[in-house]
Amino acid sequence: MLTRRAYRVALGVVVLFSVLTLSFGLVTADRTTDFDDTDADADTQSVPPRDGITVIATDSNTWLGSADEGPRSNAELVAFAADGSTLYYNDTHTRYWDVDPVEGTNATVEYLYADHLSAEECNSETVCTRNGIERVNLTTGTVTDVYSRVTPGKHSTRWHDGDRLSDTRYVVADIAKDRVFVVNTSTELVEWSWDAQSEYPRSSGGPYPSDWTHVNDVEVVRDGQFMVSLRNQDQVVFLDRETGLVENWTLGSDGDHDTIYEQHNPDYIPAENGGPAVLVADSENNRVVEYQRTDDGNWTESWRYSDARAQWPRDADRLPNGNTLITDSNGNRVFEVNAQGEVVWSVDVAFPYEAERLGTGDESSGGQSMQALGGESSTGGDGTEQTPGTGGDAGTNGSTASDDGLLGSLWLTAKGLLPGRVLNAVMYVKPLWMGPLEVFAALAGVASLLVWTALELRWTPYSVSVHQPLELERD
Image 1 (tube, helix red, strand yellow):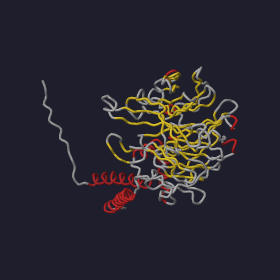
Image 2: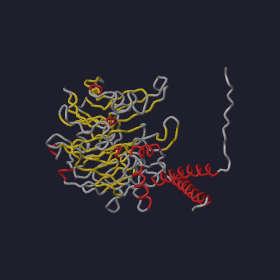
Image 3: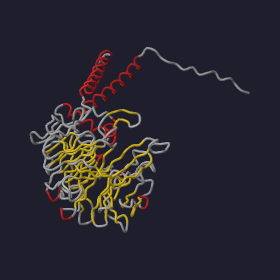
Image 4: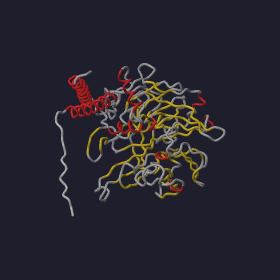
């Protein structure tokens, strides 16, 4: 039987391991990126080459710890040329979201952004957010304003996605007002909108009105129809501009977390490419999953991908070559897997939101369904590249979950024990210099201190007694 001293020594060793691991991680972490060094001759961090330009929008990238912004405070829009060099870099906005290629160009994109404004800038007593759409030529750096609006507050008032319909019309997924709307960017008038309250009770989804639907994606799928992601309802729905919600086409249902769980950026694969199918970043389930529509009008899972490092993915595009480009937000990487689930390209990026491979169409519209490709689902891999020399390291901090050996085993165990939503919440609020090893060390240290405290209280020779005051008899 272990003695009290043995318990104290064992717990002390765990706490010491935790402190040393966290200290080493903090001291050795690289908290900055050098994406903005666009000099091709400069000694920049290596990004593996890949066919075409890869554009990545990040939600945020550094730990500043300010009271106003919290742990994450600035974001990046970065484009890598085919040879791996940095073609374009911008970090002027608070958040970057959806990125789409501009049709008829080789290196021009449009993107959505959000800027958090102070109460003074808002001419208000509270903060607000400027949501906007801009266009940038990646080779010249010329930025053009397309459309913007200010919404009250932040966090749940930002627009995450929009698609161009014509030279003067844009469709936007409006989180702030739980709607999808079409705006004429020349007149700045809203010409059509769909309000989620027309189909959904306020008791569904998230808390109303603070973050009810969190409608985070809209995509043009057919003439007059849109595919829309209602994140907090765990549903991907189809809308017709004339009739509203398209019956019997909805993927998922409120609270059915086995199908999709607070998803992001679903992509529609049409019949001519082996669909109808929907490829979706199943965020809270820490996977990418594809559903094929069957002849009887149901959605059937046809492919999934996950690995040890995958943590809150928020975008997945099927490329024309059959590979899938995945944006893994809490995994701090953008990577490409083939139809057999092998990682063939990867670059480490701090907290990315979405990625686009230019030359493959909007959201890689030329990609085929996995059913047509005959691909295989892959789960439980370590997330490392299968081909030598393709690993990138550009802007990540802390260790990765793809490390072999004890760390990988411990991380898989932790992921299996904790619900995905809980683990993702921890990964979201932690400093970016903390990788899986540092997170595990912190959890182990806190648990050890709690156990140690409980044991010391149990072993203490002193007791505390509470004397009740005498009660006088009343007449």
